[in-house]
Structures are given as C-alpha cells and as structure tokens.
Image 1 (cartoon, one colour):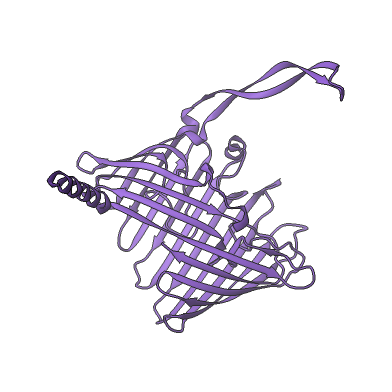
Image 2 (cartoon, helix red, strand yellow):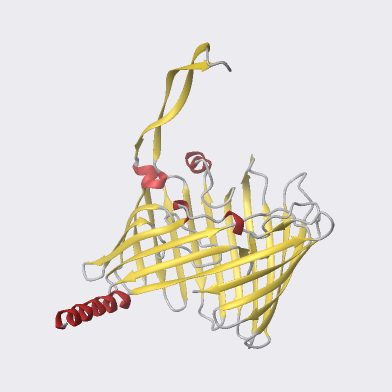
Length: 388
C-alpha cells in the first residue's frame, strides 16, 4: 500500500510540473447566413461579415508548453477555416508546430519546425511575415531588451529540380484487348535542391512601450515593414506594407500575401470613451498580378464603431467602400454590416448581423476582406463563438 501511495504521489507531482508550463487556448466559432428572395443562397462559411471585426467560421486550438524560466518550450496550433459541413482533420490545418530555446544567457533565441512568427511579424491588422506558418529554422540575437535581429532558412522557398521522363503505356479497348501502344511524357520532381537565394530570410523587430517597428526580407523577392504606435493612451496607429516581385510569385507559383505587387494597410483605433470603440482601416492594393497588369489597383476604406450597452449586449456597425483605379474597371461599390451581440458569459456570445450592399450583381460567398473581394448580395446571418 505504501508503494502505491508513493507511486501515486510521484505521478501527481510529475503531472503538476507538466501542467505548470502547459497552456491550452483557442476558440470555436460557427456561423450561418442567407441571402433573400426565392433563390436565396445559404452557407456556413461566415461567422460575421465585414472587414474590421468580421471573419470566417473557424476552429482553433493552441497548445503551448514552456519551461518554468521560459528558456525553452514548444508551440502548436491546429486551425480549420471554412464551411462547417466541409470540416475534416488534415495535416494542412496544422498552422505551426515548433520548438524554441533561449541560449547564451538568453541572448540568442532559436526556433525550428513549422514556425509561429511571434518575433518579427508586423503588429498591425495585416500581420505580414515571411516565416509565419513556414517550415525551417531561425535564430535571433537579443543584444538589448525588446530588440531581435536575425534570420534563418525556410524550406518552403526551395527550388524543385524537375525533368521529363518518357515511359511506355498500353491502352486497352473495352474487351481488354490491346488497342494501341504509345508513350507518354510526364514531368516529375526527382529531387530538391536548396539555394541561399530561396531559403534565406532576414529581419528584425524592436518593441518599446510607445511603439514597435519591424521588417523582413528574402532574396526570393519579397519584403515587408511595419510600425505600431501606442504612445498615446487608448490610441493605436498601425502602418504596414508588403512587396513581392514577379520573380517571387513565379518561383512560388502563388502569392505570399495578395495578388498584387504592393499591399499597404493602415489602421487607427481609439477606445478612450467609455463603452465605445472607434476604428478606421484602409488597404491599397497596387499593381495587380491576376491577370498581370501593373495598371490595376484597388483601394478600400472601412470605418467602424461599436458600443457596449452593458456586459450582456453590444451593438456595432462597420462599412467598406471599394474603389478601382484603372480603365474599364467595375463600378465602385460599398456595403455596411450592422450587428448586435448577446454575451452568455465572458467566453461565449451570439452575434446577429446583416450585410447590405450597393451592388447586387455579385455572388454571395464569404464576405470578408481576406477571403473574397467580390460584390455581395444583401444577406443576414448569425454567428456563435466559444473561447476555450
């Protein structure tokens, strides 16, 4: 009996040590929305419409395990975004899974795995990064408090070596007899090679109580910078910009951020009046790459306001106006999103919202700046969220 008690005590002690640095967080949010009329379209992909507070239906689970002195740890995030009916567990939904260590008296930070960029990502609305959700290893010097300078290698930017291979292929008729004999040529990836140009990433960040400034660069042809100003109480000013060249987009076969050569984002938010939040955000998307046409640019502006009536009920409204700046462009249009929130407790709430657009020619999908910039038909929806 004594051995059993000692074994149980040892297990309890080890479990408490494990739990001391272990943290589980995240949220689950789901939505349903519908357009109006006889040919109404419904979907479950949007939790809340809008570009300032809006977002898509999403499930997110974060797991962090840090040592007592924060000299080492691990980070993991699983996240699914999209229609509820399409939900499935997939390796592609693992956003990051990395390990970090602080060495040499904490003056050097090293991270490896599928990376969570908690170091040099811009702090504004957009969150530009060259390493976030990428696989590789990075290291940063921290010569003084708040300053990180470094870089690393990202295997996602690798260059694949491909070659054409010819192989015979026999085609049979419906009775199973040889119909004819021919060869096919296919292109396959036979190996991977890494170059300094594609793997390398450099950057840094400096953070104080009044501001943060950061930037990143990769010779693959992409760079970004960000400035957050928080010197004035209750006032946030965030400025961000990202640039990627044609070569970068050709190498990747896709876009790192948006299908534009240059993307700029500005946000101002003020919370100094009790119960109120005022915000405004603007995007400038310059030199479209889809299709490639340096003359095509788009500008959006989104003002937003919310008011907390009490701890249970809050109301909000935001609106986005989209402007095009090239010949033969679609008509400029705008939409507004009023909403009301009912809080069940500090961790759960229900949102009832509507979207009303000046252009009814578009197809209703997920109405959010980050998922779809098309015109939207009028619609209404409900969203629920539970924080873990």
